[in-house]
Image (cartoon, rainbow, N blue to C red; front, side):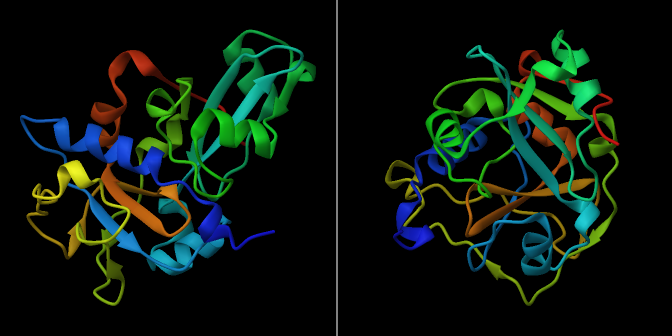
Length: 212
């Protein structure tokens, strides 16, 4: 197969960034980090130079024999509890399955490993189930050795060419931030959890107990 980077489409990343940049009063403070392609949560946390449990992983699930999909978001060090996920969605665990790679591409516009936790902002909008423990990420110290994404990088939307990224008041300390790949295996985002929910939109998610 072709190199994973060449298979990636920056469309979902760009749509999410347009949405984030449109949120005002106050604007959303985000940190974008560029790194080599990652697929797993462990690889990603190593590249971001943050603890694994500060990561938020997003997985697309489906009710068998239907086209009913949902996005499950939980801390990177935890695993899904299929019984709880199915119960939250209103069907038995035997009816739950993970989406295929083809379905992930079709619904999220991303390749596996790049899926961001914004179900409402995908090409095909889906509901987002957020595990309640995601809301208590550890405090992080910014590591100056990471490479920051620049708005002059090729993935940045051309229509936002003159829009600067919102400034962080203090790069050194990031309270209550979750970290995730934002539509690309090569770009990670760090965002305060409360701002993550603002971007997602209050009608587009449920916070529930879905991990083990």
